[in-house]
Length: 224
Image (cartoon, rainbow, N blue to C red; front, side, top):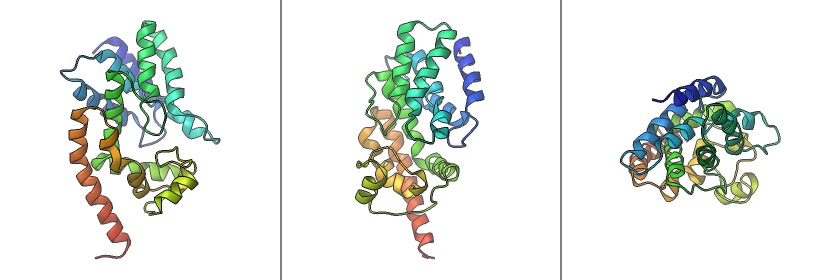
């Protein structure tokens, strides 16, 4: 592992201590997933490693923003530029890493264009399904005072709280729930993943997500 990557790890570990769904542990899982997805691929692994580590570095600024206007991917790319410049990365590589960070979100118009960006995107999205996806969903619920369980008419909800589109940015997080997130995002994951490896992992993880959410709904509705 290069000294530059080690330095990035240290900086990210200091920055991400505010939400258990977006801790350094999450970053390292994305990092390791990205390396797995990149194996035997003709890609710039250094770009993938740096972008994976830095992809959520702007999250605290988004969470602390009462206006809801800050996008942590855009903010993270700005923060990453300064970090990477200080570590002596060349301009073209910095730009590539920034592009990967900017396009890692699902609820955005900024889509990944390079194979490196697609791998970082896929690695991050795999964290939304399976056992870890469920765990992170409820950590997010606690952080944002959202709902353990809430089922709604999705079309109506999208108009009221997602800017009129099913994959829009959440306006009022307290109205959200893991069930709603599944119906508006997670169950469609195979449609927006880019790599075959990621799709294979997602298929297996989604089985658990479906079983858990169905069991949760049954118990909440009083089924013994």
